[in-house]
Length: 94
Image (tube, rainbow, N blue to C red; front, side):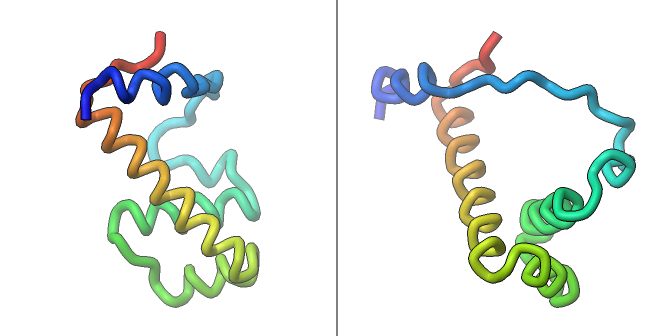
């Protein structure tokens, strides 16, 4: 697949404004409730490629089963897009 075939995807990508980030390891200071559960769940998927039972149950209670599935699917989509952009060496939007 050539970079030319990836161009429509690159053109459709939306660059969201960046939020100012707190110091590393301080996400819990600005993410509360549902947002923090989603962050911890997706971080576990990314770092460990699995989620422990307690965190899975917390996510299930927070988002219900469909919401947990949505978190997993969106995380997978993010990984797919990231891999495509890296494989074709598509630069970050400026």
